Length: 485
Image 1 (cartoon, rainbow, N blue to C red):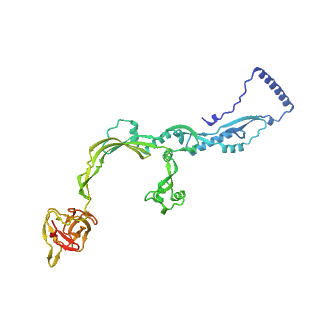
Image 2: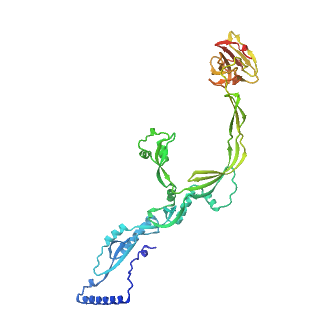
Image 3: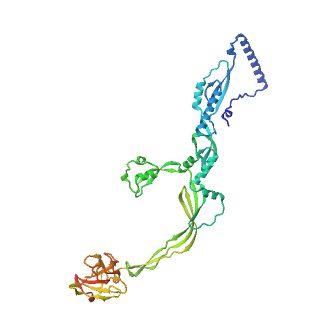
């Protein structure tokens, strides 16, 4: 409604009178008129004094601001204020927000102060604009220029997290075909809060563009919260992640320094608190690996430390349809809608020995290879003492411990033995295994008679692939052939 039409408020309200009172008032009025007429003839004024003029007492919001000679003075001022505001805000739907009342008075000698009234009106008059308010849970949050803009804001909130194509497909509500492997689609997009639109008249400064309104609703206001320091955190990154400068973060946390951060420490930070939450439901179809389970069987007949694979594990496959719920881009829920097993996983079964391996030897030595023959005996050859026997050409190259004991050396020997293992049998006997291509035990490990300790090779000073085997008793070299059984 035009402010001029709205402000035509001045009316005269006379009470209804009965006939007796009306007759008396008429008599009084007649006498008063005769008296005035008599005065007029006895005291004739000049022409200027006989001219009756109208002045206007101006009230804005029921507050008296002055008397003007012409109400157009105030009306022109109000029109200018409206025009300037329309140009400033680019909005034609702007009007005066105040109630302006004119009370006319006819006088012989008018007393007015137009300038004073105009100045007071300038200080009081304000403008308002028609706008569409976006209400969240029945509370006004933002204003945009019109209802179309308000609807665009709501749509753009959703488009912030889904494509226009997906949003259009949801609105069509057509039957959905089965998903293919690694395919996904949007099932629904909604707002977590009750959102409504209402037309209101507001200060033009409160009206936002569509983009500004979307940004404000998604970010909301900055609120203080606590952050727990994690391993690898630095002050600068913590500040940046929470929309702060490092100086601001230090000011919020007196006594904190870069080198004083501790894991688990609580820091005051700020974080945006969204005013609206966009909820997206996605459906996805994936063929996923189903990890196999692991099972360990204890076997008292096997030495502790020995293991064997009874059944090798294999992963399975399942076709799974998920329904994922996201809130402002963050996954809040993930449900399995349907699962079809393509291939069942096979459990990996390992048998583990529990029998304690005695570290003390029995005093008799088993053949340290799987078969083979003695290619060189203990004794002098080429002018030097050959301290043990050489065994070559076994059925496989596995080297075995000749008796129970503890590994006291396992590695490279610079004295010509190459890769060498030394086992102390804790009964005065020590055995040595030389020229190995690889070693399967470590120093300190307890081994049982016949345990796999390495692989036959030709490392060090060797003329070919073979095992050099020695036996020592109480520090003295012995002939292995006297002890092997």
